[in-house]
Structures are given as structure tokens and as C-alpha cells.
Length: 426
Image 1 (cartoon, rainbow, N blue to C red):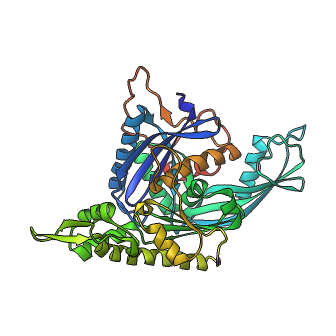
Image 2: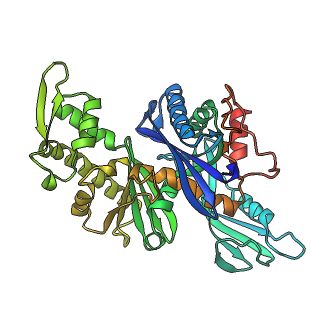
Image 3: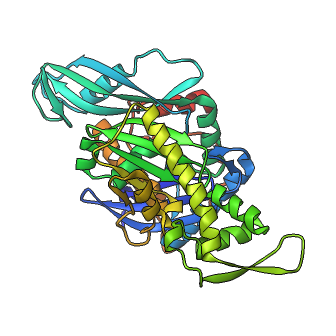
């Protein structure tokens, strides 16, 4: 196995932190390692305790490292939240080579030119996503390398985020002794895995319901049109169960995972279980029907907020319907409830890879796929992401890695990531 073919994604969620190791062979992705750890230090999708978040990242990374017998060195980090903003951009350059053949240098210059826009000082450009390239007036080109032309244009989307939020995320990754290979917008990444090309062309809503929050994204004409975050998720269902059954959050979470059903009409009354009553030694017996009533009410609210958010974005009925994903979607009955509420086509998206066939891994797998494709278009250097030990002796992780370094073989500017770290850590 060659370490130059391996990518690692880091999905920092409110409930869990997930690390996925993928091997890229002939443009196809294989998942070779997964690490998952309970997320401490996060609330409603935001970091509230850096030390606890760093420890959670380390736990997830170490679990993934043990699975593959390698040391993870660089990760592609997913970023999400209501602080994310999308704005259109346009760049124009003249092709420089004597034979007028478009190369990597021209692509880099047109992408850099598109980033020359005015943004507030508290915001940072994290990525530029090309929608199309235009060569001498010929549009809808996805990759113009090798074409002959005089004038190269690019139309795309600039993704900006809050400097403060980004700084906190990068600080956590840095203190976990990892380098950042790239930063990726999670709704875009999840859409890579969860949605088909036809769905993205027609118009579709992707609803990713996690633990602390839910992300609503609308795709149209094969591109992300709008995204928003609702501060409701699976943790709210757990809290409702905890209050309703008068038990601890941990026991309520176990009950939700083992006995929870989101559609009251299909819940089983004969499915019974016991829970400890908080503040006493007694136990109370409940059935699935009783807790299904509480779960359905909260999930209905989340779906209603998601639908309202889509209307706020300016979209009515979408031809592609709704696609659901995220950890909460592992519960029975979530699809039936969504179909009953939305009255349109609804399905649940699950990554089709061995070891990660659960909706909670959609964003993590998507980060790998999207980052690889985006890096190819923009000419970014993502490899290597791991250190392969010699003679099965794994090198020890260094105690301090405080400086982000550009890969030695790369001299030219690498999008805005290099400048980003320079601002933060120099």
C-alpha cells in the first residue's frame, strides 16, 4: 500500500467525531479504516471546550490508526454552520503558454483571480468551487486542461466563513498533532455521496440530521444553491425522553438507540423495557408506543423547521424531493414519518462502502470524495496523509506540531489555505 494514495477525513460532530481513511486507486475510493469517538466539548455544532474537543479528536484518530497500522499525519477537515456564506465569483485570465495550451498554472491564476473580491475583515475565504470554465466563449467546460485557447474564464462560488469559528477548529486540529490538507464544506461533501447527478440537476433538498443540529441544503443545476443550519437534532430527542421517563441522559440515549421508533402508527406496544428512575433505586417499565409518541413529536418539529428553512431560501416544491441522512436517520420510522409529512419523494442516503454503511458516515465519506475531485480540478496537493511504518514499527507521534507547513514540492500558492494558516499561526 502506497501512502501517496491515502486520504483521511475528519468530521467533527456534536455527538461523535469520525475519522475515515480512504485509499484512492484509479480514481475510485476504498474505505480502509474508520475511527469514531464520543464528542466532548461541542454543543449545537460549535466548539465550547477546546481541550475536550482535542482529546476527542485524538481518540478517534488513534482508533483509526490502530485499524490500519499507520500514523495519520494530515486530514481534510469538514466545516459547517450558519456562519457559512456562498457568493458567486468570476475570474478572467489570458492563457500564458506559447502554444496557447491551457495548463495547471492557468487554472491556478484564474481561480486566484476569482478570489479578488471584497469581503468583511471578520470573514475568511475557505474555498472556491468552480461551476464552469469558459474558453474563448465556449462554456460549460468542467476541466479545460489541454485545450487550446487565448482567454480563460471561470464562474464559481466563493465559500466564506467566520474567522473565529475557523480559528477554533484549526486550533483543535493543530493541538491534536495533525496538519490540515484541506478544508471542505460539509453540505457539499455530503451531497457528493448522498445525491445523484439527476437529483442535483432537477433540484433537491438534502437534510442532514445529526446530534446537535440539522443542516438543510438545496442543490439545483448540479450545484449547491443554499445551505442553512437548524439548532435541533438527535440530542433534543434524547432530552425529551430523559424528561418524559425521568431518567438519565445516558439511559435515555440507550433507550432511543435500542427501542426508539419515529412513526407512532408502526410502533409495537408489546416491545417493553425498564429504565431507572432518576433520584431513586426504583425502575419503571415503558413500551415502544409510549416513547414513540415523544420521538415523533420532536422529529416532526425538526422536519417542519427544515421545510420552513427551504421556503426561506426561496424554494417551493423541489422536483427531486427530499433526501435524508445523518446519525438520527438510523432510527426505524424516520422515513415513514417524513413521507407522511412532506407528501413528496423522500429517501434515506447511506454510503455504499463496506464498514461505513450507516447514515452517520455520509459527510465523512463525502469529504474524501469531494476533496479528491476538487483537488484534481484546482491542482491542490493532498497527499500523503499517513506515515507508513517500516517493519511494522509505528513511529511515535511528536508532542508538538505547531506550524502548518506547505508540502516541499509545492512552490505556488495553494488556494487560500496557506494564507489562512499564515494569518493564524505565524
